[in-house]
Length: 551
Image (cartoon, rainbow, N blue to C red):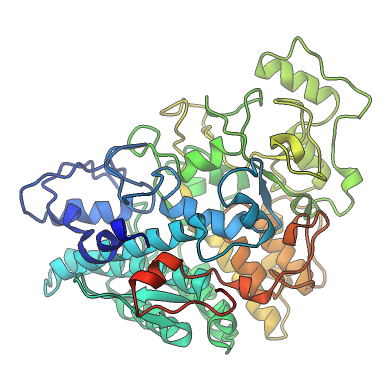
């Protein structure tokens, strides 16, 4: 980490929070940014809300100004955007259109280095958030009232989640449990895995029962699902698999009060925090609101980043036109790319008469290239892709990454409400991000059963039934499983982790377009399964060591 903000992260970052004499809107974490004051005080409830806000905000004043982290681009340095980029941009799911942007070619081709800024951003953000959590826990240590015990359990959960991200992305963590000037120590592999497991076990009893917490706060089901995620990846983290426990804890989540949303698209719409159908599946969301939580990460990133001016039903006035689908992701829904609904090559796009959503829809409908046509052709409600002409003629795959229309548009994330009511803001989406949702438990259990030699068809078919999928799986294979993870969770910030677990991220077992920098894909060195510790932190903290393979 750069010297100018190293101390802020690991020594005194929480002083901003510590001296909050703040006002905030606390309504099931429907939060407003918190402005720091300068009178020393600790307002427990305000700081507690701030700890959750770290998942969705990057500073104290909205899109820009008074950033959490000094020396970093505020829009680029949030929790979700940084973790998303590291888990999605190097994978078979999406490409970043503007390859001239810093470190983007390296993420595209899986060729980053210890000096890459984008890998540093996620490391710094995770460390900063953990420091904030440590401060809250130190300030409330020894308090025994029921509400404080519950708050402490939730903050310990968030800290465990952040340590899980460090374990998954870096294989190790700069580890601290208290707010102090001491440098963090290195905790890695089995030791860090065991710590996370023990933390989740210790706090479970103090957490809300499933679906009893205010929406946006972690409950026992979130605890169980993180444990299931940890156990499913145990072989990667420790060298010893634990599929039986992954199955056990996934089953606990499935048997809880959560239910699958009956309409897949509603999970990713602007009223997913009000729509009971969506809420019954979302176990832990990152709260987003176009008025109170404006920023350039979170769902703003997911909606704006996947739109370009001229697309119908954009849901935002600001299409960034930077994220589009790789051909490999399209193949998850169409094994034969010739079956993808596309505008015929000999049909010209009119230069006039495509000025409104209605006009674009009419033209797209004529040639069967609307998203609803895509879904029908795929026989799967989850195929939320757009091949129409709004914003330009699209390709399915490209021999050179030159712009947004080099692939199909992904319209899964939406700033529209299922009830048709207006959203809060035309630019900043209201859409909450489901960080944990019930479908993960079904696929976790399916994979765990498969790895143990059992029949995993029932859980996969349950998700396919929800998606009105015309293909029901008869025999589960490893390829079917990894493809199903993509179909259900594409563009939700987890794909790299799944590919690593299947031994597919770096190897020639599975290649995709632009993997390794080759148009048709190629393998890369195995040490890229982990990100490097930033060279700046290696230089500043003698306790940290570099991951194998990096210099």
